[in-house]
Image (cartoon, rainbow, N blue to C red; front, side, top):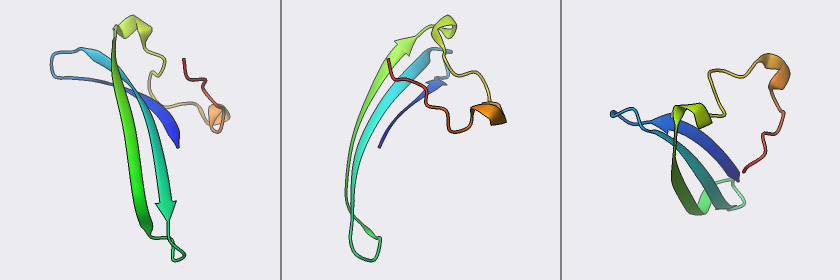
Amino acid sequence: MRFQYESHDHDGQWWRSYWNELWEFDEQGLMLRREASINDVPITEAERRFKGPRPADEHGTEIPLQ
C-alpha cells in the first residue's frame, strides 16, 4: 500500500508524509507481518495539495505521488 497525507503541528508547520507499507496475511485474514516506511517532508501552506474533503466526483481518482 502506498499513500500520502498532509498535516500540521502545533507550531503551524505543514508536513507531507509519504507512506509505504507491506502487509502479509494468513489464511484466516489475520495480519502476520507489517512493514512501514514513512517520510515526512516540510512544506509551506501554499504547497498543500489537499484542502478539505474531496468532492464526491473525485472519489476513486488517483492523485499522483510527486
